[in-house]
Every structure is written in C-alpha cells, then in structure tokens.
Image (cartoon, rainbow, N blue to C red; front, top):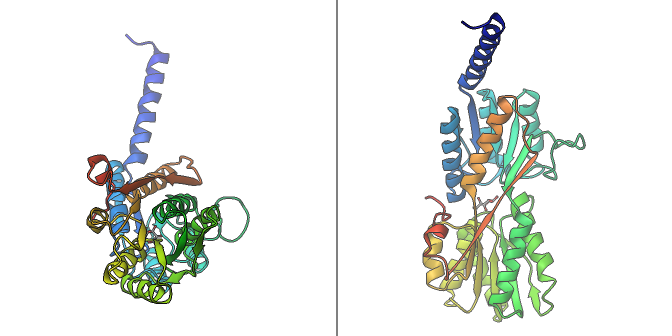
Length: 324
Ligand code: T6T
C-alpha cells in the first residue's frame, strides 16, 4: 500500500505531467515571411522551418512577396497579421521601412522574430529605440561573411588590382553588412582598389550588364564580389558573356545549385554558403520556446560553409548547397 503522502505526491506528479502535455498539445501556427518566395535561400530556409514545425507539432505558414521589396512585402505582412498567427518569423526587406508595419503586429500581441535580415540596428530587447521589439534575430554573421569574401578575392587576384561589389540596394541589413565587412577587410590590401558599388535591385540580368559596363570602363578589372545569390549569379554570367572566365575572378555569396558548375568550370572561385535551413529551424524552435513560456536568446548566429574547387564534390559540403 502507498502512504497517503506518497499518493498525494504521485497525484501532483500526474497533474504536472498532464499540465505539460496540455501546453504542448496546443497546435501553434507560426508564419514565415521570406524576403521573396522564389529565392533558393528562402526555399531552403522554409525546409528547415517545416522540419522544426513538424517536430513540435506546429503549423507553418509560408507567405511572401514576388520580389525583394518592402512595397510587396508590407501587404503580405498585413494579410498575415489579419490571420492572427501565434508568432511571425520575417526577413524584413528594409531595415527602416519595416519598423512601423512590424510594430503593428507586435502591438497586436504577436511575437516577432526576424530571420536573415533585421530592423533598426538588429540589437533587440534593449528597451531603447523604436525597433528593439522583436524577440530575437537569427542569421549569419554578415560582417564576417563580407570579410571572408574580401580575403578570398584578394588571394584570387594576387593581392593587387581593381575589384568592385555587386550588391542589391542600400537599406538591406544583410547585404549592407557584407559590403561593409568586405570594404573594411580590403583596407588591409593597399594594392587593391575597390571601385564604386553597383546596385542591381536583386536582378541577376542587371548585375550581368553592370559587370560588362564596369569592364568596358576598366579593361584592367580583376575581380568582383557578388554580395548575394542574384548579384553573384549575374556578375558571374557577365564575366562569362564578356569572355573573361578565370580572368575576372568571382567570389559569390550564397550557394544555389548552379554554383557547382560555376566552381568546377572556374567561373566562380569560391562561394560562401549560408545555412538557411538552420535559420528556419532555429527560428521556429525559438518561437515555440517563447510560446511555451521559455526564455530565448535575443540573437542566434548560424555559420557558413566555404565552397571551392577543392571541396565542392565532398558530400559533407554538398549538403549546404541550397534547395531549388
Ligand atoms: O543572401 C540571401 C539573404 O541572406 C539576403 O538577405 C537576401 O538575398 C538572399 O536571399 C539571396 O538571394
């Protein structure tokens, strides 16, 4: 026979377990709003987010705009807010222009976590400024990524000559930081001139024509850093169209499937793969932790895998190539 006190504590234990089960049983809906829907980076992020949602029994809603632009992203955000999800994960397409639209969601009581890109300074929960309300920022270290790109390009061009950055547009936290990190690191190479940045609006065709225009003005152009998937893809295409494969060296941010051929053919020297699936996975897990009463870190950093000719065929590396 159990003593009365033992029965009581057993009962409490059962109640506690039942309570836990109840909280975990609630099916949360977590929305993921990417920078744009048709980008292998965000498609891969979605996969990671789906895996985490499955693990915790949450429903993931993936909804985004057709291009990387606040004009198309804000209406999507408004539509998502109207559906009252339990949490929103979002890659804001502009660090200032998304502050007020996201504030509306936070004021409506929806927890916000930014993934990949940030608003304001990206330092959250400080009690300072108008953009500290998101709970967490989950992303690559983009300043570091820019510095890695600079070192790789410097090496590829023999630490001298002319290079430029092919970039999206000012105001995007990730690509601004990559350019900043790149330029800071390039100061260590006094014989390398960094020409004016070319902004392509996330349009690979524009990045390709810009490469050709820069080359037309600078026949001694040695290299280009493509600061995101479309900038790098476009710049590499431009190099190929100009018949300069291997002469104008290319360092790429991001790793779509096409990067494998481009590395093997020597068109691209090196690609810096982000880990978007991790960003999605930890984004959902952080939201779930918060929704079930746990505290979460205000920032989570994910890593890079640097891919070049020497390791592109390695399975451990290939798994970081993005999904189509
Ligand atoms: O480079 C990624 C992402 O990190 C950036 O914020 C926007 O561009 C990509 O989605 C690649 O196209």
